[in-house]
Length: 327
Ligand code: 13P
Ligand code: SF4
Image (cartoon, rainbow, N blue to C red):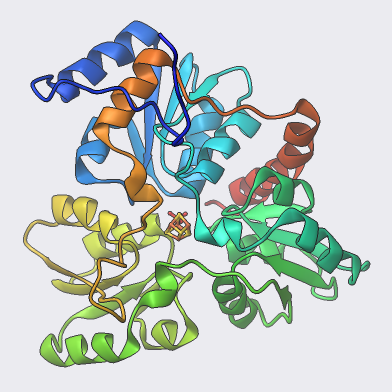
């Protein structure tokens, strides 16, 4: 059979009567596979995953696994990170076109030119970027360790932060730095409507606004708590408040409700009437695509070894700083 990946995934019909939960479980055993999923995945995918986490947790899990096959239910840069850290494993993804608008906002050729304008600057890049951008960076960070990573440089060391200007601005405020920011952003987190959030706060006066640092400054200024997906989840569980307005991708609500069924979680609304608080890239993944990817072991993440080694160096630097800082 010819396996066609023209649309980024294997478009092989799956019988609607097939119990995909059972079939995927069988394939996991048969192939010694592990399914890693980000919190923004559909709830069904979160339910079949062996590990659900934020970008830092997923990178660590990918690095330490002894499974023969890593099935990455997230977006491309996350699966690429798994390959960078654990090259002897086969990394398969449900859909190669599950990308990231933030990563796409930083094309390597343009970034290389930009970097050349600041020869005395070191580069801190958010993990939401391609392997080529990682290779041009001195250290990587995630939303959970960005402040520690930036603080690991002497205060007088000039820095460039890429690609997310919102996270970069937030870290500048937290650290008192004046990092030069690449002008990138996430299409989901940029679309939250401040006006609608303010109206929601009026309707739920006791609710706390919890926000991801990829959100715009005006939303972050209003937030009661700012953090990575894991930090938001932890806060929603441990804080005595019972109502939360959640300004990040709506997939995280699955774990929030599961952890705290007695609490109310209200997804922050986007500034139009579509489901723009859902990441269209994350949502390209489906159980059917996961089943086919595991069965046929396609699509796989592949990378030139020289690029992998260059991208691994700043990843290793991040993991060391992060460990030392207790993240
Ligand atoms: P974290 O889960 O690491 O906070 O990242 C959020 C995100 O946007 C991933 O694409
Ligand atoms: Fe990228 Fe934003 Fe989607 Fe995360 S939510 S994968 S940053 S587009």
